[in-house]
Image (cartoon, rainbow over all chains, first blue to last red; front, top):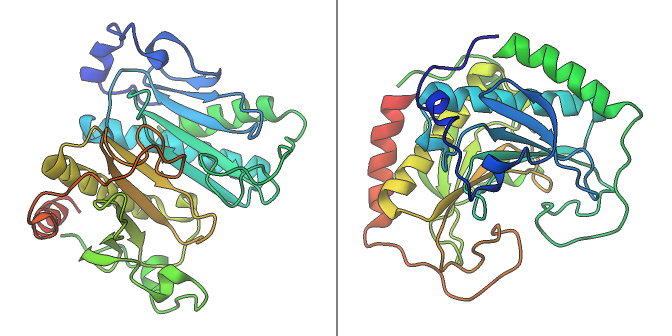
Length: 155
Length: 155
């Protein structure tokens, strides 16, 4: 795995914002972390495979990053998408980066199923029904293994 | 500007899906189009600067694309983000790719303002107030000019 660029992101890791939830806390169960970014399972009851890729530095917008940092963050997002597709075969993958409330770059990667509580709406939209789409046995262990293998090869 | 890869995307441009809205229609006022993807202003009354970057071929997921295609599409998205920030200085940029209803890759790029109808919620969430944040005079002309200049340099 390539080390992340020794630049402003690396320097800022020692300067978290005390008032930022994603500087102060992991933001979920950490499945993978290479110092540059982490992949977490947020523990959403409606969407139990809902993951986030969180930059390990306080930056607001994708265009605040250097090009190599932007590419690395997106490669991480797309590896998460790929592993979720392999393990769950979802109807669709939803990707989003908002940060209106927590302006610290984090990507939502949400596998969607025709029977999930919000489908076909975004999970941020109107609820349609109850009952989460169930996860297969050993999902978290499989995620950790496949993320680690594919991210180390990709980055 | 580099030509887009002469691969499956290029071949598929002659094979639109007749039942897909984004194969059949532009999806808004086209601000830029290089054959690989187009940038459109969707004409949203609540969020008048809401843009989409739409792949000019029928593909469902980002991980269905070749790596070079994925990077090219994201570079286009980030140029739109950059130009919107320069012209509008929004509070935040929101990015999303869902495709639950129209499974043809398209990215939402939405500049957000503290006084816009949904802030701080996603625009897909609960409405908070009436009245769109106004656009500056000449916005569409400026978008066309700056997108063209920056995309031709970037891609």
